[in-house]
Image 1 (cartoon, rainbow, N blue to C red):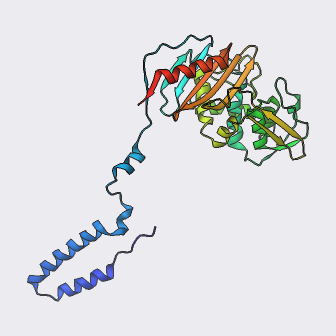
Image 2: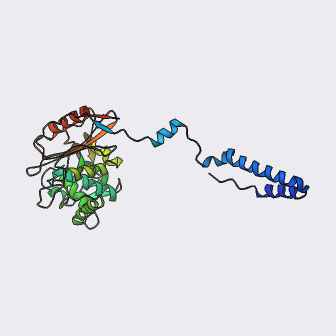
Image 3: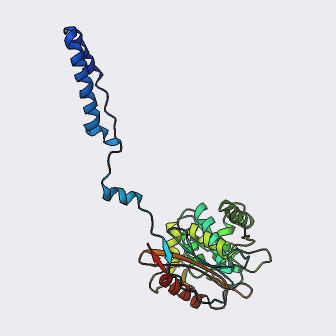
Length: 317
């Protein structure tokens, strides 16, 4: 909006008139002019740029804070899962935890951070080439050596069916290659202020110095969920992608809770050493809750127990 120019010429003309008046009237007209100017600045539409009184309904819309969960003092059920962290996503209030700082194996929950690095660097349409991804161990989507896909398609292959070959492909196309990608993952851990996570690979395959905690992985997931692309992908139950060379890859989510009421995402993981791992986002009555479980014997069953207890025990006020 352009600012209105001061009416200097107009004011000068009025001053000239005042000078020609009798001195006894000059004071009166000066006071009148000053009063008129004050009224102009108070009521002029141009001054709408300055904040005026806000109607209560509008003010509430801009200053209202999210409702906070209040415990009803119901005892939580018992869990076999080693590491648990549950938080209200809107307020950051911790709803439940068990060994939140304990360092445990994340398995494929690693790929949440892998996707963060990829989303930061690649544009959606960046073309990536499958170099050695087809050699990956563990769960893969069977990417064909030499195939070319967009970064968006590879990230779908990373997060929906949890393809280790997709993780390697993202890393090998990164400047400096695989090791630089892993280095960037750990740099992001430092930026987030997390102290119980270290990554040595991009897929979560077992490695002695590869670990996270229930708290840390929840914070990583919270950061990732702020990215619309990530949120869309992890809520996808199944999709088929087609490479630039015409190869088709049907992708099906490893998260069997997707499709149930309120379940939004996020990611699963499993290795013999890590046990069953899960990060899940659930929402009910517009109250989103983020849940992380590490080293579980029944991740989906215990996640459902947590969901039932949280929405029974807490009232948002």
